[in-house]
Image (cartoon, rainbow over all chains, first blue to last red; front, side, top):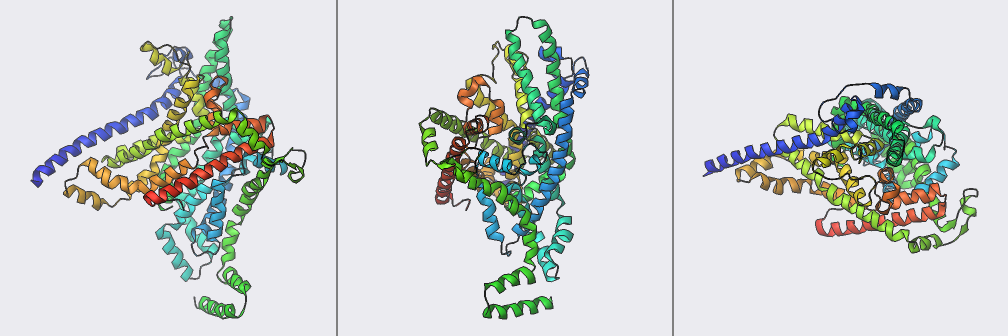
Length: 302
Length: 323
């Protein structure tokens, strides 16, 4: 009896395994194909792309799109600005988050409860767009390069994830041992806790840096001058402007010159997408090991 | 260690004799808590300035505020702005658009990461699991501007790959990004594409911490794979699931303003105008600060009410709650 069952269940297992594998492969293809298409479209002759002939392999490979992109000054400036915001902003935000998460992770700290409540309230009740705008304005931060480093610079969710990482049991027992040895809080935090918390440090640096790199809304609200604009604002103008021109295109009489413009714009768009996304993808793939570890260790406990 | 003991013994004596001041001093100095306060100080100051000051500024929703004068000098107008909003034709439209979009996003977007995590957990091939996780997490790193740019490219009626594909089946080009009826579908499906892998991580982590002994016991009892999923996997992610669901319900009126704003064109306003985009336009483009803040506050109020309500119901039904 149990033998039959075992055979039945092993056959069921085999079928199940095949089905789940196929599903996972489909999921991968759904994610990968659009990304792959962007890459091959950026180096193919735009005529094929516009005609819908491009499918699996790049056609009539040309780098003219990228050459045009590198002549586009605003874009390069945006690139430079975004690197600054991601590096400096990521560093400041991650540092302050790690600092604050340690006291929050200590249950016997007299400020544990008040500070936790103090921070949690802001997750559910915000002053809103305009009151924050007024504060930023009054502080004279508008149209300065600092505004993007500061506004929304610390996120409560990240504080919670980091503090629950610190809370996880094996670290807590270390903490107890250190306290018995008469180690100060500073000593424990800087000399013991931080060196063994590499996954969460990398995760926080990455989270904040990626977020700075990808965010456009704050720049739209607080920056008017092009000098400090991050890459995303330039991209938004680029990807949306040509979109408008394609609607105009349908209505225009003289389509000759416009076709050429549209052709160039189309290819540029694909190239720009690749250039804007590549740095984050490289960072993600190289740091991936720490990244998933950091998120899961933080979220399971909390 | 000995000095610590003596110190604490001393302070115990002192505590009996003296006031709270001494107890605080003991905690701060002897136990070195001042170091903890110092570590958290920058974040606390930051939150006071950039979160609590704006909360104080919310009062402009009840005042006739203009940027030239200080808040406290502006005249009180009570609920004028709230009344104006509730009586305006924008109110029912915003309410409907926001709730429908949010609900649609929740109903379609919520099961995907759960199912995906369960499938990942059930797959034996660790290499494929690892690879799939890496791939599906990647879209999380694509910015919203780029994602919407991609949508414009792929869905373009003249050159987009999607319309070229539909053409093969004899379907005439569809203006996905401009038509009122397509906005919600494009919004929700692109969201699923971008977020499923990221959201699944949390569920997957909960699943991998399940005691393998449970599966072995179930195998001995002759449980099928689906039975194992139903009786082991689902219960073990239930707490995470309820928490995530509660948080989503509490944010029902907080549809992603940025994503919507990027996908908004003049022709799809009928479905794409939501609370967030309207607050932005009224406040920052038309500079009606008080009116915009009133609408924003109204939205926050509904969100909070919903959160408290769902939390209460969940506490009664499943004993899971946020607080």
